[in-house]
Image (cartoon, rainbow, N blue to C red):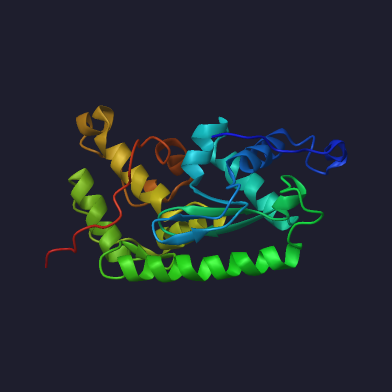
Length: 237
């Protein structure tokens, strides 16, 4: 990456300046955001936006996934960032980006117009995601397919669980509301089941409830390298 960003000394008075994780994440987002409009895999990524994931941001900043989620939530709440999450990744928008990286013009786009652009991009990403993955994704539209999830857990662990009870289903839904992604859940299943420790123990600790825990997702969800598996075979009757 090339170039620079411009920061005003008024940043010293910013409400998140002394919140180290949030400040670090925001500066990272400024550095990562596109300087010009670009296309990425058929999607229009506007100036001030970039595609990433919680795990990537964690790896790049050295923050934990929990810190990344918490910082993003704060920045979204106070209007510094916009975020759209799909099953594969997240699009981050630095709102009022032109206040930080000017193009030699007196003013950038007003905040309201940037919000409108974000909404348009969200619609495009949702449409693309639904079209590409509606047939065989284990999770669609942020809703877990618990039948396929159970099948996948059994397939990866060699266990023979019969069902995921309602209490555990609520825990999975709570994790999604907490900001964990579908990828985090699937990553955790893949990574934990691949560990020799669990293989030696017959994966006895790897239950559906185990993968619904926050500490499990924090521990195993960020270990995978490369692309995540996005689709899975249907259960065999």
